[in-house]
Length: 337
Image (cartoon, rainbow, N blue to C red; front, top):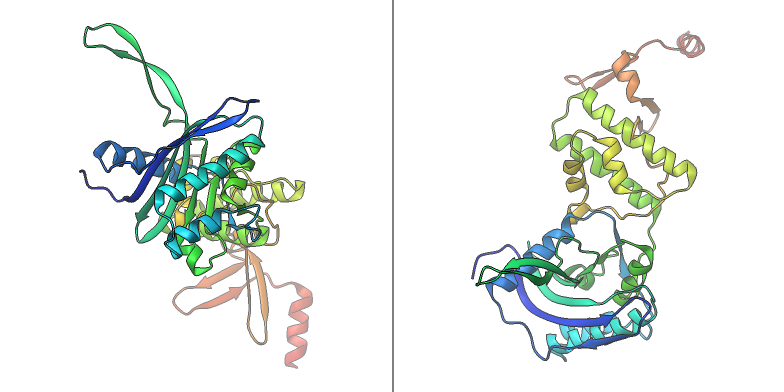
């Protein structure tokens, strides 16, 4: 078997049978899928595709396990070890059927459920993959139809970080937001409470932009232009009370290479949720510096550094303020008399 950075501990594939506006049923596999190069390639592709996608929701398990039983199922398998993985996956499918019945527009497909280890993280990955008809050449050199999995358009998937869940971390679940209707039924299936605290997510986004500028070793003017464009978009969203689109943000903030910024903001350990209205207080660090000590406070914008109104002496660790307003100058002179 080929080496991979995604270590598959368990893998099962079931089927959700449902047409839009129709009833839902399930076809269950009895046991796990055996490890193979084909299985490894499929899991690698889906997990990588999921990681690359922006527009995810994040959250924790709902506390009501009667209506949202996913944490109970997982506890029985991971903690209590009372059920095996195949049984866990079948319980999950039975609940997925219930949730799919409640969403008229939900469509069926093959449901891949895998327990995977990656960079020391133990997680449960669930993806619903549809089948499409392609074209192939037969052994007799005829042109024939060839059904295959549509891996290019992953629309419904989620991930439960089992390591983070056992530590009690606030954000241990993620899922593709996609279309609102489909995303909502799959979120309910996962049992995810994705109430996002806008202030925290905005601060995380600002930190991600700052780290990106540092990693790219940007000159001052380039960095400030990135921050100003990002600030403009976020200020606009916040003023209108509209949610952030990460795809729009990266296109606006870093138009020369939006994919590079998207990848940086989508790294698993610092990924930002999609769909929150930015907190306008938290975006000020993109355009302003603010600090305080025991006996003073100061705030200035980045433009003042470029204009020379504020000078930072890197060697001495001092700030020099120029063009002092007359009122402040008189007050300072009067205080010295």
